[in-house]
Amino acid sequence: MKAFTISTTLALLTSLVAAAPAPAPAAAASSLYQIPITFIGAADGKFTQYFFTNGYGSGIYNNLSVSKISNPGGATCYFYGIDGSFTVVSSGATVDVGPPQTQTYGYCYAS
Image (cartoon, rainbow, N blue to C red; front, side, top):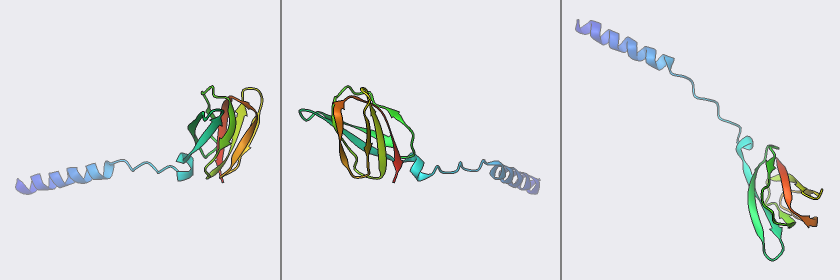
């Protein structure tokens, strides 16, 4: 009886281990990476928003009239303004927005 109980317990444990689901594959690091972009306006007004570096676009919901956009590096980013501006900000650059205007949408691609 003791041998039967031990063998049954071992069989049960073995089946539970074998039935355990495989871990999910890790997502590519570049698809999860984000960079902080700083939007700069007049009178020291500014805000920072994070953007994914895989091209996933994000809405920008801040009414600051932006005159410069600063990118610390790691991706090239593209931004659209409310009055039709289109600004490209290369990795590690700070670029003027002309004319200054509220930004509405942006996306970045890893360099």
